[in-house]
Length: 51
Length: 241
Image 1 (spheres, chains in turn yellow, orange):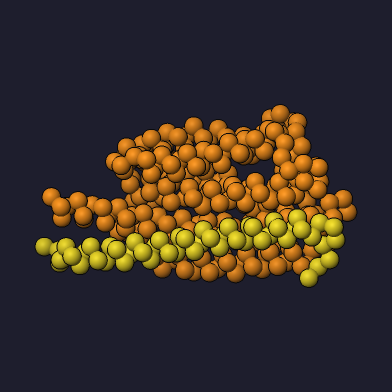
Image 2 (cartoon, rainbow over the protein chains, first blue to last red; image 1 turned 135 degrees about the vertical axis):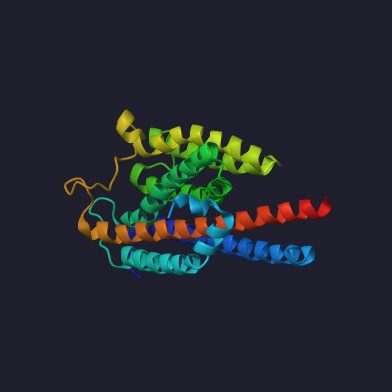
């Protein structure tokens, strides 16, 4: 861990919140992608094969 | 081969799906390298001390906040001119990522500003235009959610995007236009004399590459999701009738 001196709180807060927000947007995007894909499979199965 | 072939939703999904995991994990790896490099292996600035390390999250996120809006502007114009649904959905898909980038830029800017300027916030031209850009992002997302007919929603959000572009430009150039306020002019420049020192520049470049690739990966993933969600609505409507 580098010596951040008197600004340790600010630097750690900036990195923590930024990484946290990036993780949230990636996780939400992946979760919605999986959910919508499963929903589409269900709807297409209900609709039956294409004529 | 024409770029307009990708306006076909099926073609878009078939082409982009294999690339999304590559881009996503690649961008995360690059981001980890850039942030570790910037955080652990760069010196403090002689004036700003260790707060200079905030640079590696603040600058790339601010850059992406503005450029995400420009990507949305291009996609919106394509929708208005050529009526390709994929471009309207790509603009919609990019907005939440833009919100996150803007939020990171605003937050890290405030956290950096407090020890350097003595205040979390000032109604400085650049900061204010960035805040307005953030509000435009929220308004853009709200407008998509508020209108049921997707084509009408795409039309109105495209117009909003064009209007909001003024603030995206101001976010970037406000410092040059007004030459006042607390925020310094751009730290990055192609002119070696004006650019930050190489010891800060190289890790910043890696972080910027990571942010750009992450944005591309997320836009592709979220656009495919929007296309699928639209297909679900169309199929359900067809089954009901």
